[in-house]
Length: 254
Image 1 (cartoon, rainbow, N blue to C red):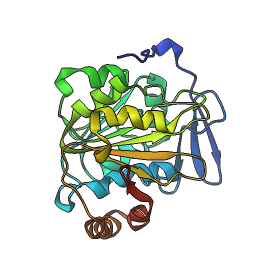
Image 2: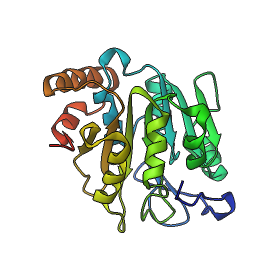
Image 3: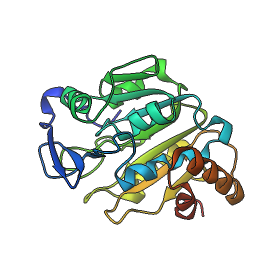
């Protein structure tokens, strides 16, 4: 893999702030790396993180809570908690910084490992390269940023190829792309090498500039009526704004 793997000693210190009933996670800078509303600790607070859950639209209704969900980059554990507590999926989170894990458990309501949850302290590049993980993830959420939130820590073609190998047939990858120096088009081209442009979807950017890209592996084509039916199911069961996602999501090839 071309990207340089991170070392624990290079990790920025973790800090926590609160404002307006929301607790924020930082990595030594004012940039927000995650958030949790104190009165709703198991719901997703940040808009871009909610949009990362649009992978649910690309899974059949009877499979949306089935299988194994993997998060690369823990953040404030919002996706991990939602997959574990709300969707009740087998959930694995991969995070290199041990302080992030400790702070999530002490300040952001991340529970200890159990029969459904496993938090792994490891570099995400190492995890996806491991042949033992090939075709084991039905959902793969990727949100890997440095302490300045400038660009993805892992963003080369080899990394996305490894992500594709990790997905099981019918699986979906959800990637947050954002950064002052990042090239959206370059990142998408790298994903397309492994996923193919016909398997990529984009979600309308947030006002802050986060654009979520979804990639499917050997998934059946889906039309708008199916997306709307799935959105109704998601909204009724999990109170996520899925009908809004249908208006935001579009195939890259379109």
